[in-house]
Length: 386
Image (cartoon, rainbow, N blue to C red; front, top):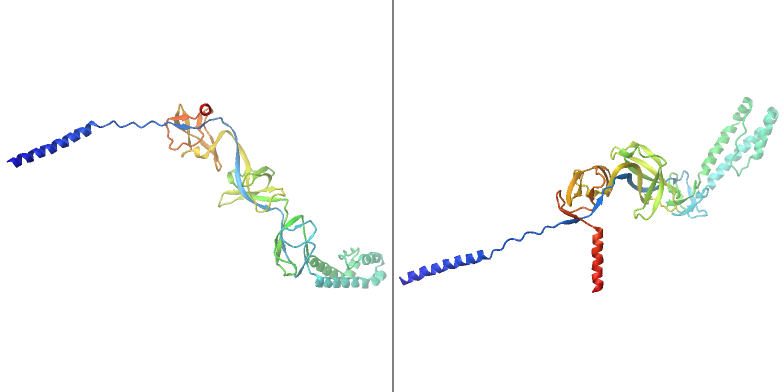
């Protein structure tokens, strides 16, 4: 009996301890703290619609406008000249770029010229007897015939009899054979057609040059062209002779070019039109990468903002009574970082920088530059007093 009573008392003590602990815990409950209301500070701009020039960005590599690829039409040994045939070598107009040994071919040309001279000399007695009226001009021609110079043009015939007589003696055949040989002899020397520089040299002095072999490349370093692709919607706005501003990749140098040619066909794959810009600047180099800004048109009553401020669905945030609101706009032109939009009245406050997590109805505070300066000045004064 005694054990039963002790067991009942033990159970009652345990139950009482549990209820007592629960009451103590419930008495210590605290109210949950309310989260502090955070008001984000935003940067804004006041809308002022103006005329925005639409500038089309394009880029490309410079290519020499005048380029000469050097090929050999004859065969022989490459002879050295006054200048080494090396990359970067400059030549003036009329200077010889390449000289190929033509001594053997030159001998055959002189032989043909000598044969022509002998044929004309052989007909002189017959001309004196049968055609005395034309004898003097043919005698003058023989007197002007120089074996070391280009063969002079044959005298013009004044009658059919004279023409038939000259033709019957194969004078014309021999003359045109000599002129053909002289034309080929001139191909043993290649002259610079303009002032420029050698950008590629594929042969050296003493090399055996074969017919049809490429020898190098020669360009004019004063005039370059850049090919750019422009959207077809701006094709009608491009004009030949229009000035174009060009810059290098570092934006440290500015050049001025002129639109010289516009392709009349639209590229089917990219739907763009090719335009060519000419730049006359000796400091440039072929292959340089430049960026061009083409003035396409001017958009009235528009503003230009950062592309990051344009929300999905062509909307932007405005600030109205310290609350964010969202309005519809009409984008006109997109560039790499900017967008030109229309449809916002003057005086509206729009965001200057994107706000993470922004939504319509969000409470914000406009950043005041004057207040910032005042607070910074007061902080500096208090620091100096200390």
